[in-house]
Image (spheres, one colour):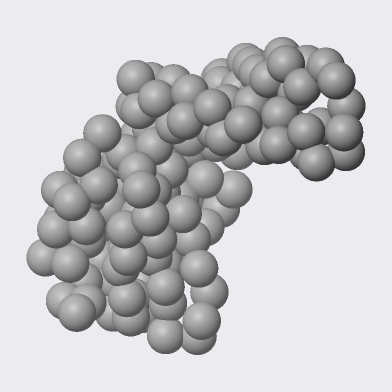
Length: 144
């Protein structure tokens, strides 16, 4: 497993992991299915606007592009994990956010966006229940 995809910060004194937030496989596949549909439609529209008689090839190209992209990124995206402790939110790649520094928590489809007081933005991607993730973060951080 790639250690840069999971939190690697040492826990502080009296700190404990309350909840781990991982990507959901079915949610990842569903999001990429919608992305493929949009890419297929977009490819067809572009070819139609250009007057290409083979508009259907836009659908094939759009589908192929998203399938390759989705398959290539799937293992990394599904391995990413965030840990919510009683003091901080610990993320992949060494991300560390003190709970008192969380200003906003937004939902963006199956993603949960965490905005810090300094303006940094972090995405917790492909959540099965983004509302539950938001509620857990709000309960711990006191963010509005």
